[in-house]
Image (cartoon, rainbow, N blue to C red; front, side):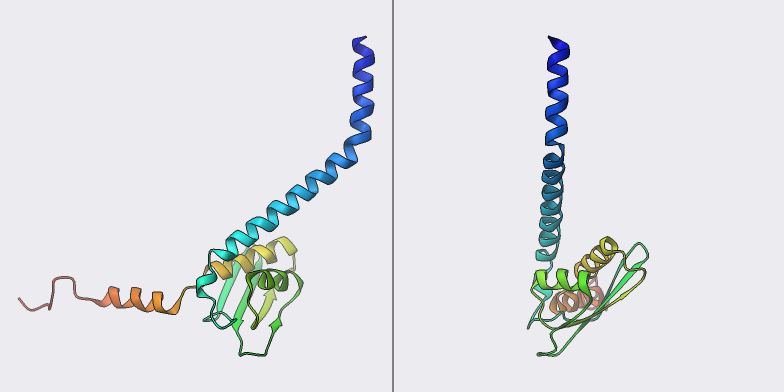
Length: 141
């Protein structure tokens, strides 16, 4: 009886395995898409007028991605994987260049790294001003 159940279970698992694998692939792709979306939305405050505020470089593994701001009407000048991430971020005018081997996973990670390095210009100015303020008042004793 136990041997019969084991063989039926084995046949059932063999029959369902392609569907289980397809489900795992879909779930993995969805989670990867969600992580990219969440990572991009964390940095959206630096994106103004449809472009990024300054030139930035993203690095991941052997992959380098350069992201440069562009004037209105330029559009997205980027390759496939970078273009997908940029479109997902809602950036409309940007020039991007991928330097490296072209591994899609590393290109996506390097693009996300570049977007994470973006800072709001007002925030950077405030931090720089705070660094040069005198600590003890006017400095005269």
